[in-house]
Image (cartoon, rainbow, N blue to C red; front, side, top):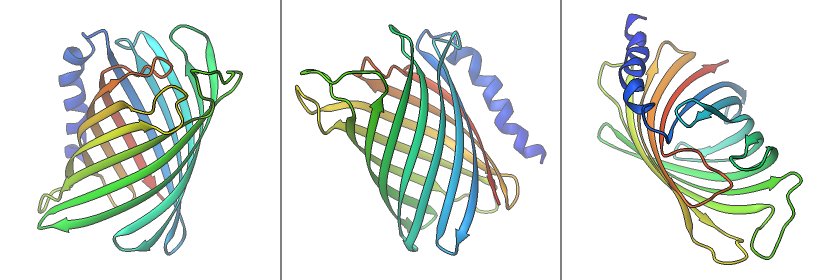
Length: 223
């Protein structure tokens, strides 16, 4: 269990440098996983985010993720998110987000490589659609991730890259966001897992400002 506190140590080590930047943010995530059937799983998650060096609340988010594993290497699922977003120039905004995804993965020696394609639709309550603004906004999210299985260790380090492309922008469909992430998971036991990551975000979307440098801390529990 003492090794688990390494995650907290890393957090305290990097936090002063990260949060000294105006575009820094903190993401706190927690989820519970239910095995409904041998290949069917439900995940309930809650997320709370801060931006501007912890000076502003960014959002809270509640998610339901239902997935089915068709084969050992192929999984598909659907997600509903309810988001309360603190718009940087307006007011608090409620959002309903729907996502459909397919994930495939394969192993090379001790590396596991996964590729995920996700369709995302976000409806902003009280926001009118115009000739330059879509509502709901539809996006294709493409992610590749590499995890490394360290022999005899409870740590699983990983790297990932994710790209957001608009699908129904009234003016022009283009790449509007990239996310590059480096992190590690720590398996406390069969049911409990901790995670810490650093994420760099580059975006053009003025209605979804997250910050460029993110420290994330997560906890996962399996029933």
